[in-house]
Image (cartoon, rainbow, N blue to C red; front, top):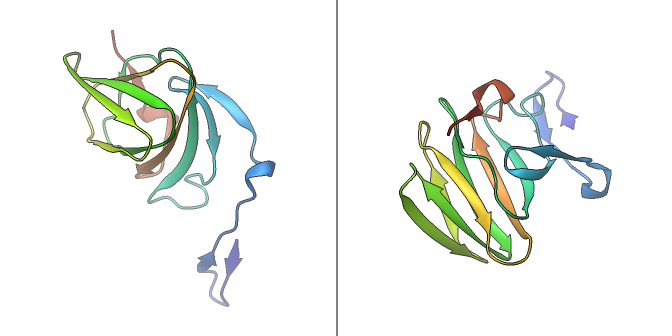
Length: 125
């Protein structure tokens, strides 16, 4: 991160090769930015293979942009949306959601606002 004289962050460069993957409810995540970097939002790459756990967020809006592959997202336990490469889905707070990869592993870009907080990821049945 590069800051000006008053400490305001001017820009951030993240080297993807230096970001570690870790498991989460949605699959394997590479957090490119965190709430410590930018409290208003964060950007992650998530690899989904198989099925994720049904969950929701009370405060966070998530945008899923499909980079590769195809996923089906179950919304509020009833509505299914099929997303292919280049498709975008915005999920508002309180909406239960669960994703399935369609065939092979899918890679999605996730933008969360405010920045992802593990305490705001609530598992549902």
